[in-house]
Length: 372
Image (cartoon, rainbow, N blue to C red; front, side, top):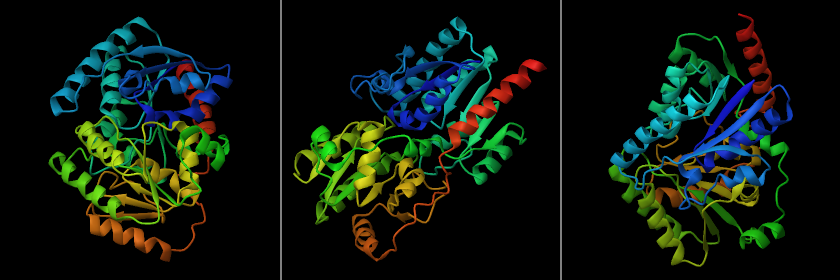
């Protein structure tokens, strides 16, 4: 079974990693990894190299990123991505495309595949993020796909509503959780040697992306977050940089300026999967609006102060504390965390067996399709 797995940025990598490992080990599959978007941008660190560091060959690198993060730039990048992938799908034959999530780049790549009638498997469909335009792309990707791997039963039901049938819709859990049993986390001393960050100090891991629905609010929201962080005492703060969304570079610029002016703030462009999970493991808690807080943090027994509406609508565990993006509210939430009970590391997004299930379902799908 020849499979094209498409990845447009660093956030895909840790989610895809355990699935790629299983597909590569199984001789039933011939997997080709295709990277595009921020993966092939030097500005974002050429993160396609994450695959190569794990020993995986990248079959195709598609340059389709348009400089800038205005609405026009993103719309132009979508058009360019469709053109580039039209050529790719025309020149290569695949039995299946695997696509993840909700990015506009992913939507463009899959839209270009429709005239070629290539079956598509979609991961993480049925989820809702009211503070981002991702919902529109995610639900469109579900409509364009033939097989669906969701992260919860609720998300499975939503995909069934969207496509009008439960056929080939499977709740497998979140693939990213499979990493936790396979990745050897850094020790505190190893982490310090590599990243020059001492996680023996009480640490807040902060990732803040722009909200892509209320664009005009992002400047204000970022300043509110910075105001709160300026008042935080007794913690060092590790900030990872935002995605390439509309206004992402503006949020990035504000955060980088804040990092430069404060000694207890550490800024990191890209930890890689092992580094990010190690930081999460040793941090006191997470702060921001990233999906990894919603999905993975519970498995580390970490509370998450989830800011604003970007993740609003996703199924949440008991470790999530939802807070309005106002400095005073953020500080109140931080202060109140010490009153909360210790978490048990149970995770509503699964038990780390998603990739194994996906591989089995893909084999069945391919055999059924070829027998008809």
